[in-house]
Length: 229
Image 1 (cartoon, helix red, strand yellow):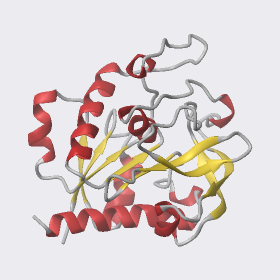
Image 2 (image 1 turned 90 degrees about the vertical axis):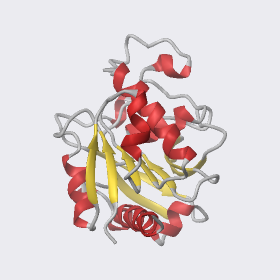
Image 3 (image 1 turned 60 degrees about the vertical axis):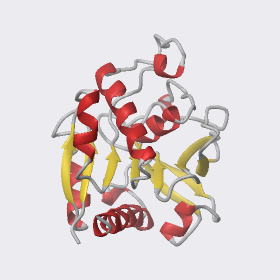
């Protein structure tokens, strides 16, 4: 059965690659841009899953900190406040959620975590992705989805992030960048399918093939949700 997945973003251009990856796996897609809180129940009613996308930083005031003027953050307060409510609603419904890059930061923040405001070594350079190695914990849900744990190479296009000191207590870390002690993936043990990754699997030619299983598994879970309607 075809499922309907919402994709958050700042505009159509920002969600293009996410849309392509999900549609290639049989999902229908509905863009979700900033809206009003009262619109959320109607917006979510037909959805079988939500992908919280990357691009842009989160406002540190949302997790109780003052913005570092040297961090060069470009925050979008309206998007932040709307997506916080949207994610809370998705978690309350136990809807399949895939959170990528900024989406991972949002998930951590919504469940009580904080962020490191600037990680200059992990940014893309002149629009090109940076790359580094991560370690996927073999016993994690992420490793089960990928059918492998251990080390693999990923792309990197972020300049915010978190370590265990910033991790929300309700989330488990399922992958790390060992040299930097940074968390590269999170998952919620309290939900059926809530996975967050720091890298960008929608840029399919830039990541290890096993990471594409995350996209496939997300669509399959959304299809199961559609079948139960």
